[in-house]
Image (cartoon, rainbow, N blue to C red; front, side):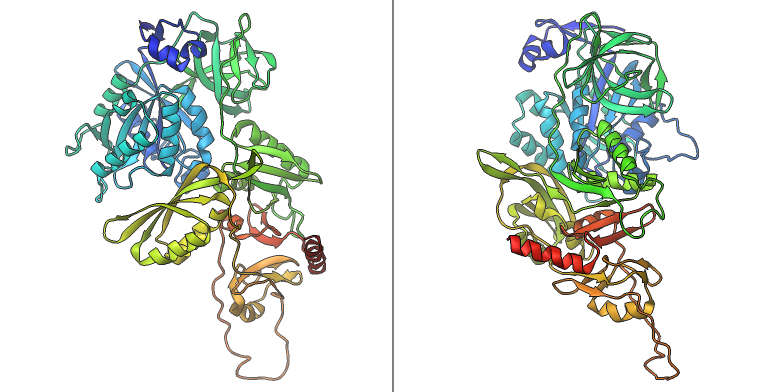
Length: 637
C-alpha cells in the first residue's frame, strides 16, 4: 500500500497531530489510496439514502432479494420502523482504485455520542442539508464537532428533487452557520454539491440536474485528504465502536493511526482507566461494501474490526507490546436526563416476559453500558433499582423498547434532568428548539412555549402559510411538549431540538395540568363501567382489559386524581326500562406510545413495560398508602 510524504508542518503542529499519530513534526505521511469520511446531517435529511446510491453506483449493493432494498445500513428493526439511524455503521466503496470508507451517523440529537466518537476516525465530512429545510438544530451540533476537530467539510445540498426546494437560501443559511461557529478561512472555502440521493444524481451546478454521483466522488477525492499514517511506527489503534459475535466474543472497531496489525499478533490493550492488558488477535476484518471480510494484515489509515480483545471498551487503545503508547481518550458529552429502571412488581408481573428478575435486568443494563458510551448506570438501594442516564428521552426510550422486544419486563419512572453546580450556582441543561407551525396555530404555540419558560431567539415565515420559531428552553420543560404541539396543531406541527448548553435554573417545572383516573380494585374492565366513566376524561383502556388497584386507566379532564371502578358490572334484575336497554357507545381508547407514556407520567407514577403491553400506574398502588405518603410529604415541607 502506497504512502505519500507531503510537507504539511503547520497543520500537523497546530492540531497536535504529530503526537496523536506518531508522525514526524515536519513531515506528514498520508495514504493516497484511502479516504475516510463521515456523513453527518440532521435527522431525515437523506444520509442513509445517499449511501444507498453510492453503493449501487460502485457495484457494492449486494442485498438478498428478501431483504430491505432501501436504507440498507438501517439494519436494526427499530431503525427501519422509525425511519431514523440510531447506530453508526461502516461501509466502503471503491472508486478509481481508491477505497472510500464511509461512516453513516445518526441524525437525532439524542444519539450525538455516536457522532462524537465517529468523527475521530475520519478526515472529512459530507454535511448534508435539506434543500427545503436548510440547517436544523442537529446540523449545528455535528458541524461544531467537525470544525473543532479540523475536518474538511463538503456541503451537499440534498433533496433537490423536492418541489419546494430553495437551495440558495439553504446555502446562505449554511454560510451563516459556519460564521457563527467560528470556522477558519480554509474551512469556509468548502465545495458545494447539489444532489438528490433518492434519484441518485449529483451536480456542481445548482440549475443543472446530474446523471450520476461522479461529481460527488470526484469532490471527495479532491477535497478530503488521505489518512495520516506512519506504517513503520509502533501500533496505535483507537477503539471507537464495539460489536459482539457469539463465536468471536467482543469485537473492537476503530482506525489504525500508526503501525501495522496482523492476525495472531499479541497486542497491548491500554484501558482508559490506566490498566494495561495483553490480548491476541484471533481475527482481523475489513469493510468491503456492505460486508465485513477477514483480512490478514491492516496498515495505518485503515478502519478495521479486531476480535480477541477480551475486555475491550470504547476509548481503549490497541498498541504494540514492545512500545505501548496511549492515544488521547474520547471526550463524550455527559448525559442530560436520567430515569429509574426497576423490576416489574405489579400484580400482572411475569405473565408475558421471559426476563423478569433483578439479576437479569442488571446483567442486561451492564451489557448495554459497555457499548452505549452515552449511557451512565448507577445501582440504587433496594432490590432491582437502577438509575440510567442518557442524552435525551429518545435515547432512553430506544433502550427500553429494545429490551421490551427482547422479552424483558420492567418499570420506568419519569425522566429527570441532571443538574450541574459551578461556583455555588445550580445549572440545568438547555435545548435549542425549532418549531414549524401553520400561521393559524401561531397564537397557541407561542402561549404554550411562553408558559414553559422558553426564550424566543428567532421567528420568520416559511412561505405564506407556515412559521418557523426558534427558542432556547429548559430540558425539563420540553418534556411533554411534543404531544401538546400535535394536539393543538391537529397533527401538523413539527419540532426539532438539540442540546445547547447549561444555564442557571429559573422558573418552575411545567407539569401536567390535569389529573388521572385510577383503578380502585382489581378485575376485568367492563363496557358498562367505562360508559359511565368516559365523561370524566379520555380512557386508556377498553372493555375486557386486565386491571389492578393503582393502575391508571385514563386522563381526567380536571385537576386532581379520581379513584374509579372500571370493573363494575350491570346489576341484573327482572325490571325492564327503556334507558336500561340503550346500546352502549364507547369512544375508542387512546393508545399511548412508549415516548408519550414517559412524557405523560408524573413523579409519583410509573410506566409498566412488558413485551405486549404498556400500562401506567401509581408508584404506590394501595390508595390508603398513597394518602399516608402524601401526608408525610406535606408535613416534611
